[in-house]
Length: 258
Image (cartoon, rainbow, N blue to C red):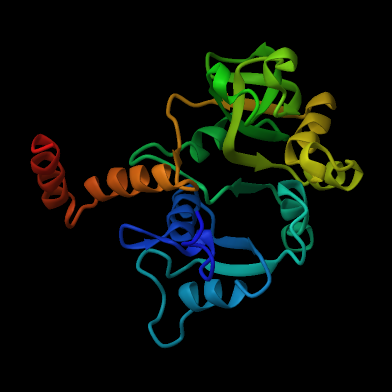
């Protein structure tokens, strides 16, 4: 996303009328969250705090009863390390983890379904992905199917490639973890790319028999690439309650003229 992110972090890039991170916080709130921890690079916490906790402008509409805390990850050591950074703040509570690069489609929330599937352990959101994604995503080792959308997760492999892929059920950026994930994160070694991979910790809780997968019918919007950013802005803009109709008319007129 360079040069757009040279001075502004990706999570704060505006999508339609709010930064990407606000879309994710609103999604968590719809699932019942009232306390949110945003893991950020050094220097970014002040931007998160200013946006969500502005004394001058007051709370954001719909987030009046939500507390948002930035937590600094001093050195980027991977997604697993980012999650582990929140261990002291989360404590022994179950918690959702949402990746800001990935946004849900309108009316496409999955967190509630994941919570319904939970059985005292963790639940990861899955999507059946094509072969081209096998070297880009983490994939699970499936076990017994509990329902047509809920499957036991017996393990997981980060970016396995075609040769080592245990399935085509990929991890797509939404998780509901029990606090057991923190112990698993404390015991993993650097994995793919020399980073602490969250997928390796999911593998550990899966092998211990305490992880399920919820298979979503819907994709997520990938706002972390230039083309995906444009697509995310178009989809969410077209669905906006205030100016979506005008935008849809513009897009229709514009594309018909190409």
